[in-house]
Length: 88
Length: 135
Image (cartoon, rainbow over all chains, first blue to last red; front, side, top):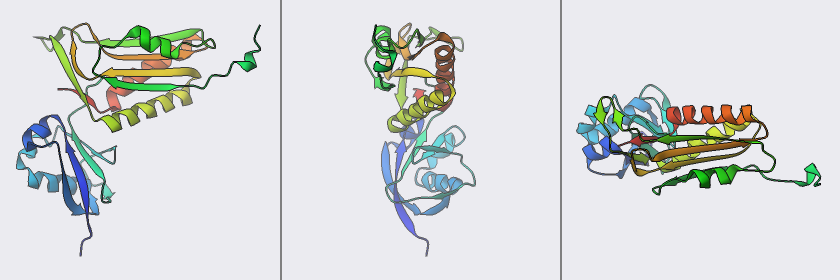
């Protein structure tokens, strides 16, 4: 049985417009590859497919590429979907 | 005169996000020190054009706790690379009209070379790494 945990997903900018929410808690496997985590989120909000190539993913406030990296998540972890950065 | 060893001053990293208009005077006052002969500043302001279009104002948003942490990392990097005294980074959020400042970075150091380099590094790295964006 795959151990699940509850993580909080924060949506910003375009992704917040697409999902219609700023945040939600979702249940995902504790051990999951970054791209799979994205797919779980996209499954809940299919419109996010439109921005998949433009968003930046952050897990526990560290940038994560949408790729193979194996994540070890814990309940309460914060996932953020942010647009390309343009500060300064 | 005062014994140099008696002038103790803890080095500060001051990071602030605000929707209020930024003040160059306020930010530079935060880093001025009797130990320093140089204060270097970068002020980023809203330009009136972008990709051929007219701009009236830019609106900034940030993923705040991470943005602050990323700026702290930049301050830490700066201190590893150069002997600077105080660092202040102020970023405005919300609407920033043309010619107003969206960011002010101030760094003080004993001599000018290090604060000039640190400021340049700070703005370049902030633009590359800190989760702030224009809406």
